[in-house]
Image 1 (cartoon, one colour):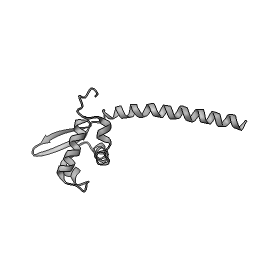
Image 2 (image 1 turned 120 degrees about the vertical axis):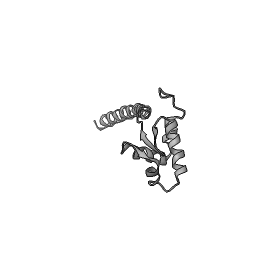
Image 3 (image 1 turned 30 degrees about the vertical axis):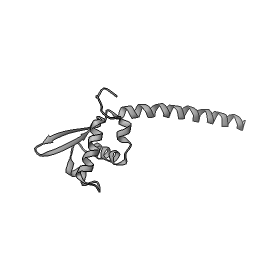
Length: 109
């Protein structure tokens, strides 16, 4: 795990489309109460809460209580792990495409 003492793997947390949509919604706002997040889905409050818990365990979501309401915000820093992983494969494909291009140019000559 990373420096955030995550309880859950970030890749596991973003594997679900609902959680990716939650991340998107949280990225578009400073902070969103649970009831507003729930309105964005065709599922109940409990189901949305379970998804938010998984994101929280991965360090992607921070929550705070304001009276009786729980508000959520995105902590994007754990996404750096995914960005780093993708960067490796981006370099891999770039290098392979360059080699392929060189090979095709050599065949044309």
